[in-house]
Amino acid sequence: MKPVVLASGSPRRRELLAQMGVTEFEVLPARGEETAPAGLAPADYVTYLARQKAREVAVLRPDHTVIGADTVVVLDGQVLGKPADRADAVRMLTALSGRAHEVYTGIAVCVGERELTHAECTKVWFRPLTQAEIEAYVDSGEPMDKAGGYGIQGKACVMIRGIEGDYYNVVGLPVCALRQLLSELD
Image (cartoon, rainbow, N blue to C red; front, side, top):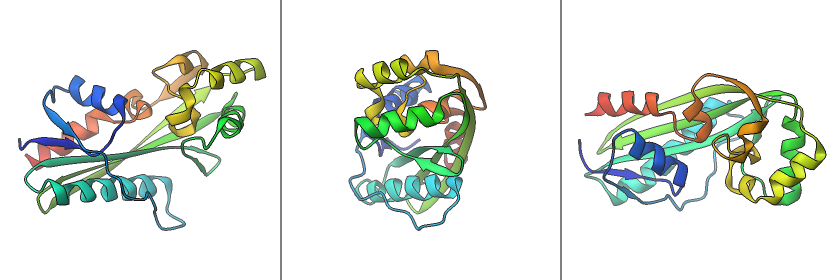
């Protein structure tokens, strides 16, 4: 396999890539504005953004395998990205409390002119949360850099009643699907 570049600054994605056995890789986060055409379905939306990130970095590293990813939480058809501020995090967690939602992650792998993409969806159920629990979690600072305002692998683990699908997708990188894409391009 060609040298690998992760087009993301996410520490969770770095950890998962290493956990997959990709021990040597460069981290070069995409810097472009994350915009997608209006009206895309969630799977198309995250795939579009993942491709945008991978392509941006692939121009800088044309002889590498470049991996881009994007994750969103979807509740009642509404995309929840990263919270803008504390009030936004509280709003998101209040909306998720006691309900099911979907987590979508799009991945794109570019090797030279070749490119493969995939979108993964996992259903997640939150248990009912008290306002005090929401406030304490937001005050921890953990929700601020995470889609939907929570990290399943962190303190929010006690808020999750169950999942259907790929756990690692909810963390931010569907490793099984990524391994398949890498195998197809190698």
